[in-house]
Length: 305
Image 1 (tube, rainbow, N blue to C red):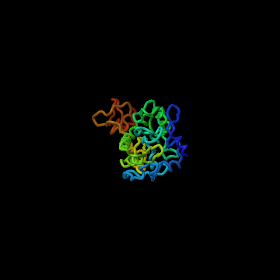
Image 2: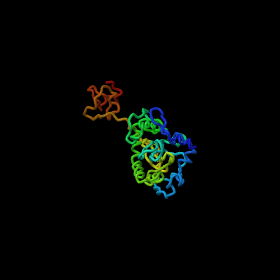
Image 3: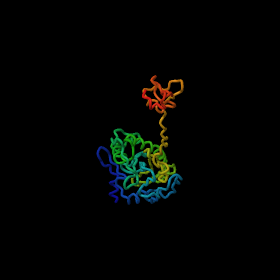
Image 4: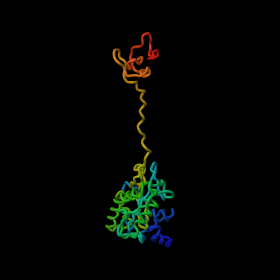
């Protein structure tokens, strides 16, 4: 087992970039439940793990109660993990400061999130600010890997939309994580610090020293950090709101004008033009409707003038 895990932190070349294995790529369900989603670490493994933890915020559920898979909840199309590297890991997971790893929709065997494809699948060609790291040998290649592996299921319009959302989501929790690390906190305490600050933890990757925050997106496909218990409230939708009821069709408009004794009515070319015009009985030779019938005739139908 140790040899297998050791392979997990070796940087492997895939395509153009440096490949970083993570939970969604090499861990089994048993590995996730046994080695990743747990809080009661042994004191020998984590040193200060036996110390009292920071009390979790009332807004966040205890992550040890979460199952292996993520349930998006009613009317929530997208849910997943914002994965942050504490930098305390080894190999490619060792950094001088915390960094964002990626935004991972929990699709397939990992959860009930939909995989919503982008309008434009073109991979990134520029390095985004939250990924800029002089210690990373191929940051662009890493971004391209994240886009192909996760971004293409995140409901983003394109890669720019996806990475802009990743950077926006990670800014505040990374600042809190860096503050905790600068204060000398260990992995356990850093996770608790995020939890108590309202950045709700879904699970931990103790081997790579990564912290996974829960996130969801609604019909607008804008990702938000939220506790899993709040997904329906934060990102749920009962479907599009019905539009206003259509107004009833108005009755056919009467022909304009009217016939008044002693005055021209509306202009006309035939008796049909005067049909339906108030008080008009025929089209007179003057070219106007009139209320005066032809002498001896009771209606304009009898007058072919």
